Every structure is written in C-alpha cells, then in structure tokens.
Image 1: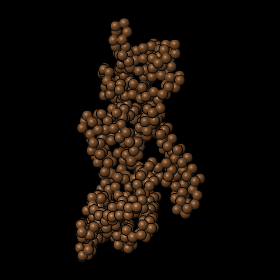
Image 2: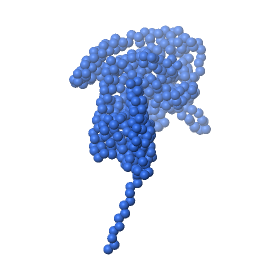
Image 3: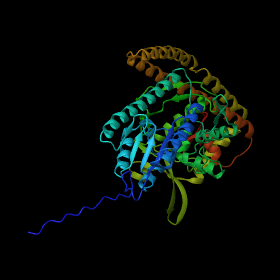
Image 4: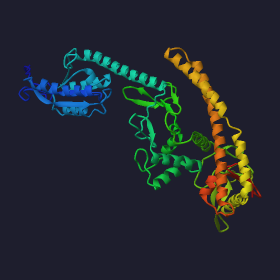
Length: 520
C-alpha cells in the first residue's frame, strides 16, 4: 500500500486582521464616530472623537491609519441614511480595512438587528470591531455573546428615548401647543418665535381652490387650471395631482384649527408611520393660528365632497360618478325617474347633434323611463330664460331675496354650539386628569365623542344657513349689476348661480342656489 503524502497549504487571506504578515505587515485600522444631535455640546464631542481616534491609531506602531469615518447629526436607530458608516462598510468589503474602532455600541448602532448583521458581515471577512467603552473585540470567542447583550440594552435605550419624546409631545398637545411642519404647507410659514403666519400670495391660491370647488369644478379641473397659470405646488412641482387638491380642501389648519397626531410612529426603528386609528389619543386645537378660510366655507366644502362621493339617483338609487366637464353635468335631473341627464352625441337619420338624455332611459330603455331627449340648445335656452326672467324681476326680486335672508338669520344655531363648547371643555379637562392618573376614561371619551358629533351636525347646519345667506347676497348683487340686461349662456355663470335643472315632459324647473325656483 502506497504511503499517504500530506501537504499543508498555508492560509493566505487577502483581507482581514489575520492577513498574511508578509503581505500586510500592519493592521489597517479605521475609526467610526457619530454624534446624534446638533447641540453645541454634542458638536464639540464630535470634534473630540475625530481627534482622539486619529491620535489613538497613529500612535500604535502595529497599526496603519486607514481613515476616520464620521456621521454628524444623524440618528443611530438605522443605517440607511448614515453615509459615512455605509462608506466604511464598503471599504471593508473592498479589503482596505482590517479593523474598526468605535466608542461604544450605541455609537455604532442602537438597532440590535443592524448591529449584529454588520458585525457578522465584517467577521466573515476576518475584520474585527473594537468597542472601546465596553472593551469588546468581536473576534474574541465571547465577543458575540457580550455583544448581543449590550446591543439589546442599546436598543432598549433608544426605545426609551423614543417613548420619552412621545410623552413630551403629548404633554405639549395637552397644553394646546401646536407643532406643524410648514416646509410643504402652502399658505403658511413660521415667524422667529415658531408661530404660523400667513403667506398672502399662497393664501390667495388656497382661497381660489376652495372657491372653484364650490362653483362646481372637479379636483382634476382645479389642478389643470393651476398648472395652466404656472402655479407650483407646495413641494415646488408643476403638476397638481387630484389628491393634493383634495388634501388642501380637507385640511382643518386652513380654518385656524389643528388636529394633532393624525399619524403615529408604530416602529421606532424603521420610523414607519401609519394613520392614527385609535393607536394614541388625538388632540383638536381650535383657533391655534390665523385662518385663511372661514369655518362656514370649509364646512360647505366638506358637505360638497361628501355629496359628490355619494350621488345615488333614479328609482334604483344607482351610484353615479360626479362630472364637472360641463356646467349642467350632475345637476340636470329627470322629472320622471329622478336619475341624472347625460350629454351625448346623437346621430339619427343623418342628423348629428349634442343632446341630453336620462341615464336610466339610456341604460334600461323607454319601458323603464319615458322622459324626453332634450337638444342642448333647448336646455341652454331654458336655463338662460330663467336667469333673464330673474333679472327682469329687478327690485321686486331683490326684495323677495332680502326677505329670505331675514328668515335664514332667524334660524341660527350659534347659542347651541356655544353651550356644547363649554360642556366639551369641562369634559376634556376631566379626561386629561384621569389619563394623567392612569385611571379609566373610556366613559368620558364616549361622552366627548357624542358631544363632538352633535356639535358637528350643528356646525354643518350653521354653515349651510351661512352659505345660503351668502348665495342670496351674491344673487342680489348679480341682479343689481345686470338688471335690464339679456345675458347669453356661460358655463361660469351657470356654475355660480344654478343649483339644479329638472326636465319634465313639457317644461323645465330651474332652481337657483339662493332657493328661488323658476318654471320654464
């Protein structure tokens, strides 16, 4: 039997602290520094760290200085935005560093998962990490056990800090102190004291959006008009998305109020935020800053948003999509079945023209709805006849409208709203006391919710009355300016003053936004 011949092949690793001595005579050592805040004290600490490790590495004869990697003013909970940290890891992977020195585990990472992941990644390349404060070298046998324990403590520390910040914010909210990010908030900026102040030019854009929406324009239509006029979004972008317009229309801050904690951080490591759906308390601060939009106008817009999302017409209560392409879209109704009329192109017996037809009749046939097809010129003519008839009424019509105003004023809900506000204030003070003591406040929260719902209904009612009053005044002013004139059809005019048009077999009923109805 032939004798076995064993040949030993020496390890010749290209990177890491165990690299062959003949190739790398000294350990290439780098240091990582991080300071998480921007205070003057901490900034000086940052400079001290850089100087300390530069000297520390260079004075060791067995080490070769491989650079200082320093992140200034960045949180340690994750490594995504730590440019210098990521550059250091890349240098290690490229075989340019054999050892990393850092002050402590909390400076390296407060996230256990990230910390262990990177240490193991470096360990696979035979690159050690030395934590000066804890005296842990990751290449030691007991290094990873100690590291796991210490890293977990570091993560706990970060979680505790995060919780303390949350508690601090909640205390501020309870005091009615509002914090708003104004950088992408059109209409406002902040003064030297951190208070929200109005930017006049931007406020005019906000007012325009609200006005055009109530005049019948769609979200898309408003956005396109703003783009056409070269108006940029709050983010400085030329394109206005429908969602951006809707957010402006639904933002309570434009009426001077602020709903705090709309979103909540559910993971302190990833910083993931979600819509607050009962995770933590919310705080609604009224009159926290100067308003751009009157409260009544804001509530009218909310009602209109709800109306457009819930258009159910006809005997079967079919859901219809709101359209603002034409002024009479979604406001022209069938007197027979109650469904909306739709503009369509008619090509019959060689005749090509635009007509308006009942949607139920289009979809289900004349056996379900027998109401007539109306030529567009006839429909427009009926609307303008009603408008010109209104103008012809002159002073008599103005007198009738003024009487309507007095009737509206007499229906105000101001006193009831004031009573509920006082009661809400008492209940909320009581709730805060219970919450601070750690006692159950569920019953109070239910009472507050009920009161807020009741108040909201009254506010909507009040806004509706105020809106009606405003529309009557607008119509009075319109009559004064145009009486004895004959006007031609105009989409803008129709959007402004016409509430609805109802088509019957032999006549039309035109309803104005002031409440006046005229039969044609």
